[in-house]
Length: 127
Image 1 (spheres, rainbow, N blue to C red):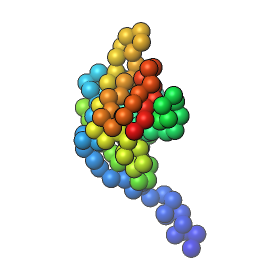
Image 2: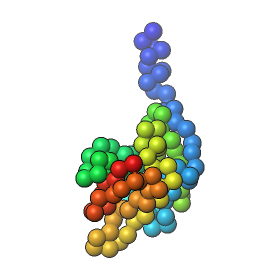
Image 3: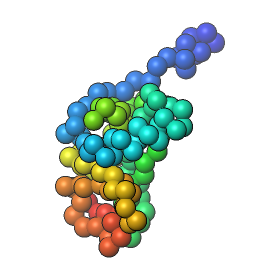
Image 4: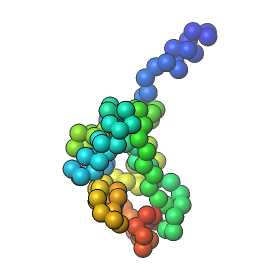
């Protein structure tokens, strides 16, 4: 019985594979994410894109670099970068494009066709 539990914990995460219709990275964003993953020693890592409550408009994006997909994630390869999105966040980000602007007021920018409104700073949205 204990061995059976250990085998379940050691098994690989159960995730699905999606395509760029879920989320797409521009060449600039892909280059920046690849650079960040390499600096962290995670050349085969993933970019997690999530939507969480908060911000001026009610919802905001959360991005994080991780080693691998988690259970129930949707994995998308875009411009050579592996991106993961949880099923709940996928409802909000479908069709989005992630760009990176290397300017003073730049950084990662999300163009989301599902956003009904965005705040003036561009960091949050409502759907």
